Picture 1 (tube, rainbow, N blue to C red):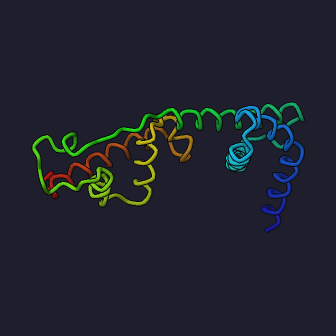
Picture 2 (cartoon, rainbow, N blue to C red):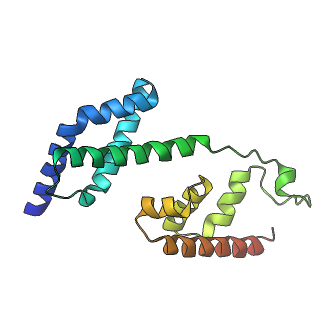
Length: 169
C-alpha cells in the first residue's frame, strides 16, 4: 500500500531526527544503566509509533521535539509507577479465614481460577488493574474510552464473583 510506505518512512525519519535526543532522555532517566536504557528506549519508540497519528504533518522541528519529549516522559512516568507498586504477600490464612482446604496453596492459582471465565481482553485489563493503573491510564494504554474501562472493570468483577460462587469459595 502506498499510504503505509509513506507512514513508515515518515516515522523512520522522525526517529532518525530525534534518536540522539530520545537516547539522552532515556540515559538520564535510567542514570546510565545500559540494558535498562535500551529497554526504556524501546518502550519510548513503541509509544511514539502508537501515537504517531497525533503528530501534525506540518509540525516544525521544535514542535516535533516537544511531542517526542511529552510521549517519552509519559513512558517514564508509567514505568516509575509500575516499579513503585508494592507486592502483596498473601498467605493461606489471608485468603481463607474459614480454613477452606479446597483452596489452592498459591494465591496466583486462586486468581487464575477466578479469572478463568474472562476473555483475553478482560485478562489484559485485569492485569493493568492489578498493576495499579488508574482508569484514565488504562484508557490511554488500551486506546478506549474511560467509560468503557469502568464498564469492563465492573463486568470483570461480576464474572469473578460468579466464578467464586461456582467454586464455592
